[in-house]
Image (cartoon, rainbow, N blue to C red; front, side, top):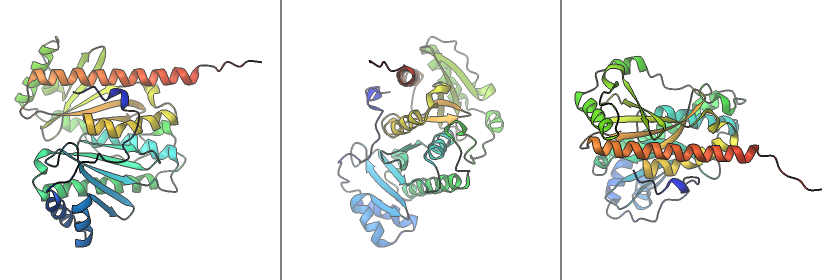
Length: 320
């Protein structure tokens, strides 16, 4: 995991990098048509990567080069009847669940608009139908979040992040009971050995494994498709203790997801760092290296939050 972006994660990405679309116009157009937009909208999307659907703006662009990887970013204005506090709470709470499904994260831009960032799998970069499902997924998730937030009481505060949104019903007991493939358990055990930990994983028996890496507790679970390991690390309950801290966490989520595949989320009143690791074609040593980077980012963010909290609590010195 590249940790070079850790010190710059405090700002949001409001404009994509100026990378030409290249010969991907037809792919973009076919995907847009598969979504069901008009030919005029699809033509514009093929040229600019931009598409406006109601008050949701969609933007697709390559992160490095036209061949991929790509990202899709949705911008959604905060509903006028929803307070900023409730809006931020909804975005943070939703991240707890979207991590289980996609390489995606909810964030904020500098104007306070909601942002949903999705990293497009490389295998979708050649298939307009698969890419159209990504576009539909981003649009649906954005609209659903806004509708649920509007239906929640407008007086909900930051401390009620989890209860302010009707979250997807995920039966974790059922998920834990599902058989984890032996290949994934072996991969985690191999990573444990590289990390100097006991080469025994609770992943297959309990559905979740707990690792202590660089003084940071990291939880590992397998997604329902058995293709991705989902990680989480606690950042401290006070990390989201004020509106300013919630705003800073959401502003950082765009870069965290685009460059590292990570996101900050609120889960049951706690602040967590989430990440996803694709298991296909990898090794235990690479997973161990990734986990060390994940723990280092969690430690860095935790230190940032603690420093900010100390600075805000420090009494101001006045002179007469």
